[in-house]
Amino acid sequence: MGRTAVMGAGSWGTAYALMCHDAGEDVVVWARRPEVAEEINVERTNRAYLPDAELPPLRATADPEEALDRADVVVLAVPSIGISDQLAAWGHAVPDRASLASLIKGVDVETRRFGSEVIADGIGGDPDRIVVVSGPNLAKECAQRLPAATVAASPSIDHARRVQQAAHAPYFRVYTNPDRIGVEVGGAVKNVVALAAGIAHGMGFGDNTMATVITRGLAEMQRLGVALGGEALTFGGLAGVGDLVATCTSPKSRNRTVGTRLGTGESLDDVIASMNMVAEGVKSSRAIVALAREQEVEMPIAEAVVAILHEGLDARDAIKALLARSAKPEIYGLD
Image (tube, rainbow, N blue to C red; front, side, top):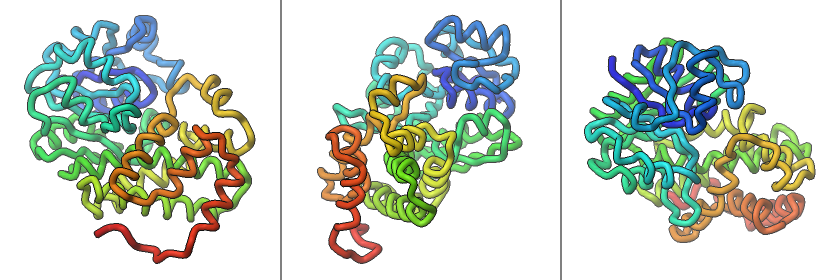
């Protein structure tokens, strides 16, 4: 196969590195903290992020240039809130012809740019070599080698296929898709909908409520994605409804977990302080709602999440406001 550098040793980066190894790649993992790199090398564990996973013989380093040396696939597995600073530090060392796989599922709050846009600005070169990877991929389950699938999306079929090849393990199917915009919008918006689903779960609502939140959240995701240039069909696939179902229903989902704890009455500050991993939807929600307003796209669930998280609105009042909205047709806003 080839050489893959996974830049980021969090839960998803570590699980993705494991799958690339199982797909036959020569994998090097970059960890920001030297002690994490040493643990991966010596003990074949990453207890801070995947406490129950036994890792294959991955190579890890705290030196980004060492990790990137001669890589033909570079996997960006750092949170959206830190990607600009990371690229400023080591983006110059990314090989010119490498395919770039973005695992980022968020939007920069200040610039309202998606991960692929931040990567394009930070690294330069052909933007079509950036491949967005997104799907129903809970890191813990992937690290357990449970069957799953994802989407590798880029306008360049060659780069999409290279990223597909790098992670296509016996238990992990990777599909290609030219609709990078749609796949990336799906990956970001599903986190916000999962927060809403978690809040509903924490408040004690039932399965009907959960199904309604997921379905209407999918409608919001699709409306925004199409307005930004994505294809409507993309949202019926793995990176749309597939990822949405997994993230909204699984207790392994960070965003659903944050929402559930908020729904039971905990404060956002207390919830965030107790977690060692980023729930992307908390930060991205404001940028997503701002993008929707710019595009004149209605996203009432996302707006309610922002009001609860950042504006002090009580969740009960948010539910009342959503239910009190004027009656509408089920399908609209896709023209």
